[in-house]
Length: 238
Image (tube, one colour):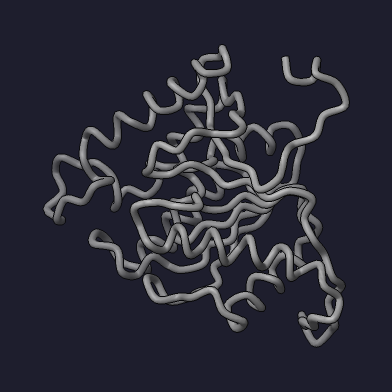
């Protein structure tokens, strides 16, 4: 299956938090979008890996993505080496996306920066035909996405691009809150984490509002780029 866009996250819920609105918007526009989680988030303070599996499946259904996979790397301990790169390369070549979205380059959780670099490097390496990967016993063809964008996570990084997600925030928040074990629940007896606070729950709206304000719309999601975006006309930027 060829996808238009493939979003990677170090943990289940990274993608929903960072670019769920963008995904919902592209799916509504008829684009084929997929999600690849690198780990199951098994080191998370709240919930379990099995609970996260179910929450990820529910979130994927809400967003309407064509496929969601988990590469089952070790939460907290995966590294950017040949073994892990080949797993990501295999996924990129399997789905041949035009655009890849991935974790923030630098962030509070160490897996986010590691995941960002791993996916970015793998996107480049995936285009080298002398690197051989196989799927179902068949040699995969080299494939390099046209663009890699990094969504914004915990750190308030200044975006290079902001996507207007007005009209898609409700679906974005619904997908995020599918991870009921992770976010604010006044009745939960689990230990509190930085993302389980009421303040963080409220930030889901006001961060989108602030990013939207930057481009003159109601709501937005921000991304950083690896290379300069190109346009045919300055009027495309209006």
